[in-house]
Image (cartoon, helix red, strand yellow):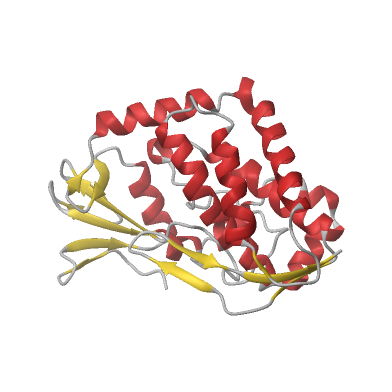
Length: 273
């Protein structure tokens, strides 16, 4: 549950979980990305970001759209009907690997994001739909809904649950003074479930106007590959819903739960046309 900013003595860091506080922190340039060994190299991060943005310019968006749609159809054709298979291992992972290989000069950051991060988010999104069959049926029945970016899935089934920042200068944020060198923990998932920003936040509602969520960051720290994430989410979820009349879980889901990311590594399902 989202709560006021506070310093956690055990963690040795400020903890921000309210939507407004997390959004403000993401937009604050003096709070820099932090890994296990300390603040990340900002210059290297900016260079990697620039490479991703160069590969995903507006002029190239339609090329990416065609690749995503073509590979989605190809890998859906390979799925067995009427018997159990793994949605992650048999569909999302090989699909994403094939997509990454279509642009060998895109840069390591983008290719890694496509091959590893993108299927992890899509696993979260598809599991969310499987666990909310009425919304999955709604997606299947509404062509217009299926064709647009599904911000609600990003909000409700986001991949990143927590981020860590380090203050490079004294800064006032969320009603507290954060001193230079102090760490700040941003609770992304809790911010996206803040009832003060999103009414009935725990309910998945694909028709909700969920723009403004922080699943893909904000400001200078927003996800450089956001356009591809949104495109893939719309195409993959829409195509899966259109291709099969029934998609149901057929076994227990296995999870990866890390300090930053949480996503299913195995989703056993059966499908019927």
